[in-house]
Length: 125
Image (cartoon, rainbow, N blue to C red; front, top):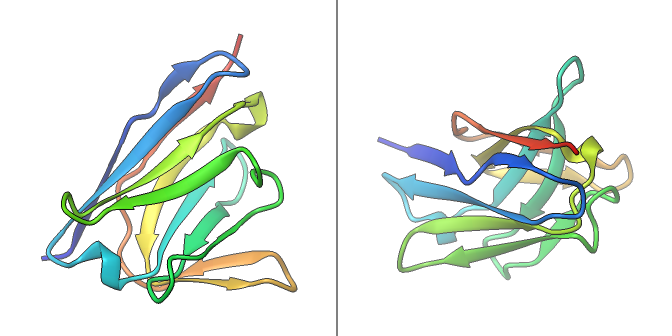
């Protein structure tokens, strides 16, 4: 059974860092494109990043480019989202998902596979 479990969210002050984890089970995460998405209260879900399985390259949303980075631990079958210089507008529920894709011209992120249950990130002073 394919399962994704996010963790690592919390309440932090602006300028702080957090590392989110997405533990995969039932499949090998390294073989799939893994994306991170977030949804702020009252807003639509938006894509944060999408990492290809083929070469590990990552496409990030403009709003997080240079602040968020993606990594994998193949041995732990876990992917991570390192978030630095957090801003209040980064607040939301963060999800990981498999089989992500990006429409670069539109800046749109999609995911066609499984989703985790999400972890809350709140950035507030």
